[in-house]
Length: 356
Image (cartoon, rainbow, N blue to C red; front, side):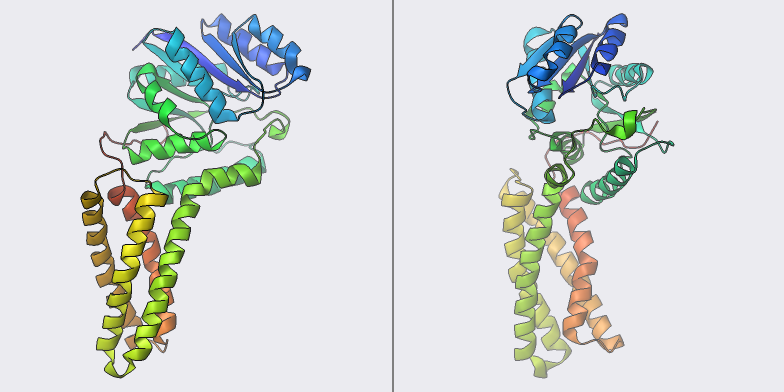
C-alpha cells in the first residue's frame, strides 16, 4: 500500500486558529484533509470557513462526541474515496508534529493489517493530568486485555482502508471510542503497533475537552461491569459458603471442602451467565464458551480450595477471613483468563504491542 492516498481525519470541537495552521501543513504535503465540526456553534464559524478552503468540512449541528465525529468522517470517506488509502486521525489543537503524522502513515502503509499508534514517550513537559491519566489507563488496559500499550490515550492513529469497516463497527460515541478500538483489537487478536512520537502540549493541554468523570466512566465501563458481576457472584458464593460452613462445622476439613465446592458451583453458574450476556456480550456459541469457562472454574476451584485449606491449617485465621483472602487472590487470574480465552472474539491474527 505504499504511495496510497493519505487522508487526515480531524475531529474538532471549538478549535482555534491552530487548526488552520495544521490544515495548511497537511495540504503542503498532499494530504486530503477532512475536519469535522462537532457542534462548535456560530462563534467558531469563521475558523471553519477558513478550514473549508483547505479541507473538506463536515458539520454536526450539535456536539455528538469525538467517536461520532470520527465515524461521520469514516462514513464519508468510504462513500467518496476509492481504495487504497491510508487514514490518520489526529487532534485539532496542534499537539501532533507533521513529521510524526508522516511516520505513522508510513507504518500503516507498510502494515495494512495493523493499527499504528503514535505513542507519547516519557518526555518532559507532559501535563500532570495527562501523565496520571495515561499511567492509570495503561495499567487497567493491560490488566483487562493482557496487551501492553504504552499510550492508550493517543489521538494520533493511522490505519489502511482495509481496516475502515472494522473501525466503523466499533461502538462508542465520545472519548470511549478510542479505548473501545484498542479493546476490540485486543479481543479480536488484531495487530497493534506503537511508534514513539514527540507531542507538543500547548498551554498545559488546556484545550482538551476531556471530562474527567464522565469520560473516564465511559472508558472504564467494561471493567466496572466485570467488577460488578464478580461482586454479585462473590456475595452469592460467600453467603452460601458461610451458611454451609455453619451447617457442616462438625465435619472438619471435609466440611470446609464440601462447602467451598458447593458454593462455587452455584456462584460460577451465575457468574458465567452474567459475564456472557452483560459484560463481554459474547456471541460465541454457548457450548464453546461454557466449556472453556467451566474448565477454568474447575481449575480455579482446585487452586482456591487448596489455598483456602492451607491458610486455615497453617495460620490462625478463621475460615471466613481465609475465604476473603483466597477470593481476592483468584479474582485477577479469573479476570485475565476470561478476557483472553473464555469470551474472546473468534478469528484472528496476533496482537503486537511495544514501541518502535
